[in-house]
Each structure stands twice: as structure tokens, then as C-alpha cells.
Image (cartoon, rainbow, N blue to C red; front, side):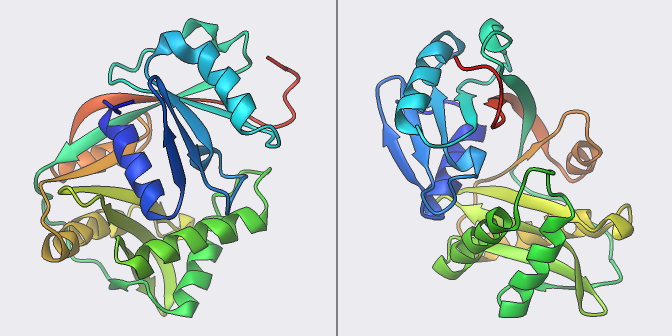
Length: 258
């Protein structure tokens, strides 16, 4: 299966770079992250179109019999949500995929900005990520996610930047190159007490500069919540919408068994 959507193509490229396994079939992909079975979007099935949703659910149960969640991606760019999601107990998450060939500079910020690489950096990243924990997310899951980030950095496939104030990590994001000139942003996050102070915008611009020096870059890709506050920031830095991405999920312990 050839992935048509830029959002899922870059998702899969990042997962591959981090050590996930991808098995391709004619009408679907199976993405597996054995090191973190609780990571929904590291363990999912991507189907070629919405008409294959039931097939995707069947494939998922066959490939992941021991996980509690259900996660199906629908390839494409129009954001169409399959009609059968209600009877399957699935919830739809539609995101906006944005691209830019260059990223505008952002204002100066009162913070130290540098790449994350030291042992203490990863512990601080873990603390920052705990702020956004879903109630069902355990600490093992987050430690594994931070471990995946560290492997991306140490392999040379990614760079993660942090903004620090008085030595404390308060904002962070990463960029990962897929080897074909496309750079994907990852994990944009700012401490709740330091938001709306220009930190995220500064890091988005700084990461573009770092990526352009490190790799031969043709375009930058970032994914955003259409109703979230970040999307307007990305637009102001030169990103424009190119497609919609559909992710369908059912949490563990759902009463639906289909």
C-alpha cells in the first residue's frame, strides 16, 4: 500500500526512524512498536480508505490480540469520517496537516534555547510530558515515549530543542527528517505557567534553522488541532493547510466488542 496522505506518511517515517516495525499489505499497513504496546498511535492499522474500516478492525484484532485499545488510521486528505464509527464504538479525531517551504523568524525570548542531549534533559522532558498525561496514562508509558525521543536524537534522525529558564525545561519540540527532504515537527509542548510568551513560536523557527543546516530540506510538516490555539501560530510562521488527517480510536475497557 502506498500511503497518499502527508500526515500519515510522515507519521510512519518518524515511527520507523524510532524503531517501530511497519508491515505493508495491498490495502493496509500494520504499524507496531513492541517497546511500547500502550502507545496507541505506535500500534495501529492504516487502511487505504474509509470503506475498508471494518476490514481494518478485523486486521487490528488479529495483529494486536493482547492490547486493550483499538486504533485505525484512514489514509486520504479530505477528512471524511466513516459512517460506521458509532456502532464500532470508535471516536474520530480530525487534525489539520500544514506545510511550509520556509519558516518565518520569531521574536526573541527570555530563555536559554538549546538541543536536548544530556541525561538530565530527558528527565526534565519526562516531567514536562507528565503535565499532559491522560488519566489512564501510566508513568511507564511516558518513560518509554521519552526513550523513543532519545533514540531518535542519538540515531541522528531527529533534533529536539528546549527552552530553559533558570535551568528548568519549560518548552520543547522536535524535528525528524525522513531522508527525502521532508522534516516533521513532533511533540510541541510548553509548561502551563509559561504559555503565550512566544516560546513555542521561537522554537518552531529555531528548529527550522537547525534542520536546514543539518539536512537537505524541501518542506516542513506540522499537524495541529483545527480548534486549538497553536494552529494560528503556525500560520503566522508561514505554514498553510494542505490536508485533513483522520484517526479513529477506541479506548481500553470499552463495552463494544466489534
